[in-house]
Structures are given as C-alpha cells and as structure tokens.
Length: 577
Ligand SMILES: C[S@@+](CC[C@H](N)C(=O)[O-])C[C@H]1O[C@@H](n2cnc3c(N)ncnc32)[C@H](O)[C@@H]1O
Image (cartoon, rainbow, N blue to C red; front, side):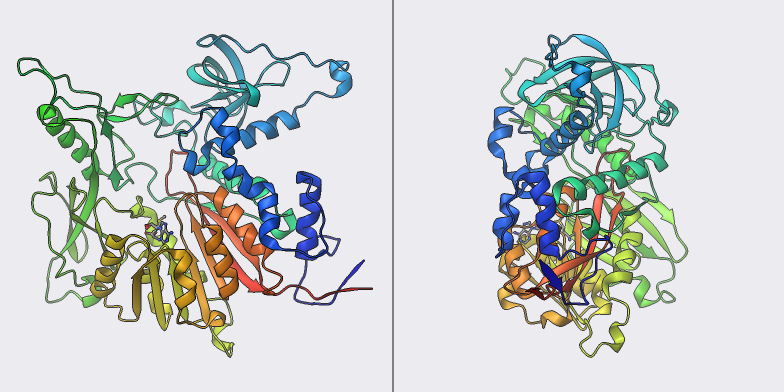
C-alpha cells in the first residue's frame, strides 16, 4: 500500500493515485499492461498502445493502406471503427451464442446505410445489420440515411470504404444549402461543408477529446476538460496557399499530336486519381485568381512539361503606407534588404484600402521566391514554397492566445521568473517572434536551413535583437541550451508525426519549467503529452497539463490544430507503510 506525502500532487478523482499508479491502472485494464514496482517511463510508453498505434506498420501494411500514413489517418480511423464495434457488440443472449459473420457485399455494389457517428477523419461511420462490420462513408453526418457504393474492403479489420452516392433521409446536422463548392462530395479536400460552423467546431472539440482518450493512455483525471474550439474568423477564402498538381506532361507526344491537358487539381476522395479543379473557395481571392491563371499557363505550355508537377499559389502581402511620414515605425516594419523576386508571381494584384496603408496582395508561383505575410504588425518573410501557417485570418487570435498564456500567473513575484524562450521546430520564427517581447532572450531551432535564414531576416525586420536562431535537429537542442531550465518556456510545434523519442527523453532531462505544445496532429500530440505527464522518475520530473484546446485552422475540413500547455512538477514522495 502507498502513502502519498507530497501536497503538490492532487487528483480530482475520489481515489488519490500518484501519476505512475494512475497510468498503470488504466494501462492494466486497457492494454494488459503489467504493474511494475520500479518504473521506467520509456519502456512503459513503448509497451503501451499510444506509440504502437502509430508504429504498428505490419498490421497496416497488410491492409495496403499507405496514403496519409505519416498523419496516422488510418490508425485514427481504425480506432474509431473498433470503438464503434465494441460499443455495439451484440450481447451474448441477443445472438443466442451464435456469431453469424457479416456477408460483405461485392465491390461496387450499392447499399443503403444509416450513419451513426462522424469519425475523427471526417468520415461518417455506419454499422452492418448484425453490427459486426463498418461502412466508412465520406460527406455524411450522423443520422443521415444514404446510398453508398462499396469500393474497398478491409475485411480482417472489419470495414469497407464507400463512395457517397446520395442522401435518402438527411440527418439533423445536414444543411446542404451551406455547400459552397461544386466539387464537394468528390474532392478529397473538404469533408464538412454540409455542417453548420458551430457543429464543425463541436466536432473538432470531440476530435481532441477522443485523441486524448484513445491515444494518450492517460486516465481521464490527468486530462483537463478540452476547451471550446477556437473559431477561424474566415470559414471560406482563408487559405493563403494552394498546391494543386497534375499527373503528366505533354513533352513526349509526337510533334503533330495534340497533347491532351491532364486534370489539374486535387485527388478524388477514395481514389488515386486527379480531379480537375477550376476553383477552390477555400483559397483567398488572389490565390483563387492565381489558380485560374496557372491552369491556363500550364494548359498552354503542356508540351514543355516532361512529367507532372505540383503547382504553387502562395499569397504575398505588401503594406504601402499612405502617408509615409506620418506612419509610425511599428506599423511599417522594415522589410528592406529582403530582395523582391522577379517574375515570381502571376502579375495580378488586389489592392485593399486600410486605415494607414494600402494592402497589395499578389500570388506567387515560384517556390524559391520570397512571400510576405503580416500578423498584426509583425511581418514574416518566407520562401514561398516553405512551411508557413495557411490561414492568416486566425493567426492574430492564435498567437495572442499563446502570448497571453506563455508566462504563468504570478511570474513577476517568482524569485526565478520565466524569462527565456526556446522554440523547437521554429520554422521562420512564428512563435519566437510573436512571443519575443515577453522574454529577455529567445532561441528558435529548425532543421530547415531556409526557414532559419528567413527567421533571422524576420527577427531583423521586426527589430527584435534578443532572438537567435540555429539550423539543427530539435533533438540536439538541449545539449547546448544557454538558458536555465527553471526560467525557460519551451514551445514545441513539430510536423504531423510528432516529436521523436530522443527529443522527448532529452526534454525530460532538460526539464523546462513550462511547455506549450502546438500540433497539427492532436493524436501524436496526445501520445507525446502522455510521455511528459508520465515523466521520468529517475530525473524526478513530470508534467501536469494545464489546458488543451483545438484551433480551427482549416474550416470545412476534418483537421484541427491542438495547443496543450503543461507545467513541470515532481513525483510525489511515496513510501511503503
Ligand atoms: C508544423 S511546422 C512549424 C513551424 C513554425 N512553428 C510555424 O508555425 O511556422 C514544423 C517545423 O518543424 C521542422 N522540423 C521537422 N523536423 C525537425 C527536426 N527533427 N528538428 C527541428 N525541426 C524540424 C520543419 O522544418 C518545420 O518548419
């Protein structure tokens, strides 16, 4: 039996459990995990499902699913399917002890199904009559009765992918008058246009809840209530970057032959086939106009392409002061010294009249050209083809949310206040720069050399001398960090696959006082956050989650960005009594 001495450790559950025992209890019941007297966090995580769900390549290889693998799309879908089957498993006496298998319809058969829930991938899920098999139906909402065409079986895993054919009886959340795109229902880009925006936000909150319930392995008491999803100010016309593609060029055709122009666009849902997309209403106005221009240019020059290509349409913004002499410095950050790129855009321009300046929007098509973007009065330059968040409309609110929580309450009374910022996976400096005024010194690290060059330009352009950037693997960051861990905020914003084990281990050795974990994949985030919550007993460090909230960077799609804030604490002192 254990007695808990530390007052720092509190649980909301009626049974007081330490973090280790709490994790073990859930693991023991859910994952046949053995309790251990001496505990090593990493083997424990590895033995449990959260990391294996993403690393279990064998199982998914068999099912021949490789699309979106790095995002964990298939694992997330399968998890929802299994949970639906488990919840609806017929009682023994209902089946009379017999378990009749479900006869899976022939491929391309049309059947009618009723949607029971929306999976975290944005697909509707329906059960077979005997409740032992699942049909995955895109473009549907719970309550819809729909006609579908079965297109792909995953029989050992008990599900089939289907194409949506038509609605027979709409569910309560369906409102087709909201659909704003003629390609909706076939294009793989959006899933949720038929839902009200409030319902989309509620669905995304549920995605975050399920991610922590299904992929962290943590008992619910260790996970705070997930906040309401932070809405995007723009629900259409927000995407500052589009990257349509086409599969083949026309160079190898005989001189006298008309080279056919291939479809230029995105893939069809459920198919590895390109769909010709003339317009995408998710794009900003200049990006949409850029798509028209680029499609025309490619069609006219198709013979010059030996093979297919991915096109780039990236919005770039310039603020032209109306009265240069009366404009304050902070309203017009210095972007001189960043060379403009010649012939890198479509030649089109949209001018918007603002209070102190005219905003000029252009559409860049050259990956290596420089694009500019403003967040409040911060200016960011980037290589147009490099990563930068795609929804400018949400970035002011998003960065303000993080800025207002970066420093914990009471920091100014603390003898060792947080005053250093470590931005792992910094890109071109989004967080380093927008948080920098709060810190005595900030350091951003990114593996992309081009992003670090842009980040340094951005620090200069925004007149932030207290920031530094290094091109490096985030996992090597901690060995040379110049900051005291007690006074350091760590911001993490990794790619979809999440942090490496190496990174997490070194982070637990470094022990930063507070962590803001931003992620475009809440499932890998939940898995990594669990490693931090579990902590390292030898180092006597673990983390408590202060808050988790989703941000709707991609309205109409099934994606949600997650922000988790954590604080360092210690293990409770435990003694045998
Ligand atoms: C989701 S982006 C975030 C960038 C930045 N925080 C932003 O919001 O603009 C992820 C970044 O991680 C970087 N990255 C990927 N693997 C990395 C690694 N092992 N070490 C450091 N950076 C890495 C990529 O180059 C990319 O810039």
